[in-house]
Length: 345
Image (cartoon, rainbow, N blue to C red; front, side, top):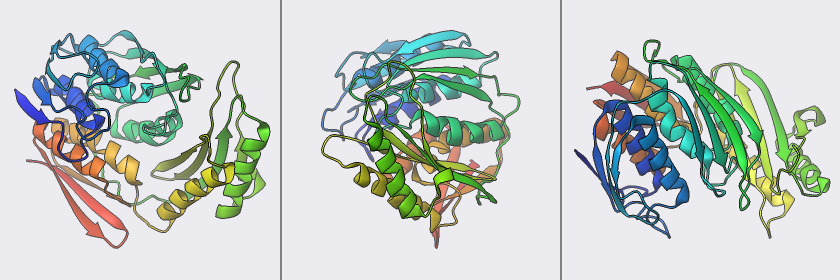
């Protein structure tokens, strides 16, 4: 039994999700206490409980403490089962985080799995769908773990109601770790604005401000079409595609924040990435750690990547991964950010 203290490091839900994912992958049970102790509302909220229940369904786990607001739980996994699954958060809580929780285990299963997920698809505190589709999933495909993602309906806070379909293909025999230390040649960069049920002027203002701030032309600025019954909501995305990696930066509209300010926030993030030559941005550096560690656990050896920043979220994630897998993360500061070496043993 692995004992995890949910108050260490950044003290958020990532400790829970990483523990669930790796417990399923390795078959090791764990006890988690002080769940989300670093948050204003500690304990399991609905989206976290959905992650727990989804993980339990995928591997037939025995769980104690799986209830709303619970601050401790015990998770004892069974064998992972590929299949067809439906997971619905029931609120605007992120369904992308539910997907990321079960994704690692299902990619190590012996058959494809098809998932239907409902909830928030574009939330400020979670990876938006387009980040998973353009940045995260392509890296996993290079690792040998293919997945197909489809956005059926956008889901914004507070209404939620988003829908995602995902097919995860078995990859246990095909995983191949690799180094990711440079971006490669620049391919394209563009921005798009999703603003269902809002005046069209909101999208135009955000795109114009972003274009001015980054020097992007009209051909790089796109107003995304809305599907029926979506919204209301607002997400401004800037996508930078390179030969070896794609990064997606997202800003969210909210009451009291002007369209221009939303755009300026995205411009600031893009510029911070552009002034560095490191391969990964802060969020992708965090999320790449777990699948890379799993591949090394399966194949042995070592790998490395560079990133612009290592957040407390990322370093806490490293610590949890090291509790479950015989890998070590060794980050070193560089002129452009950080170089992270990962190796077995």
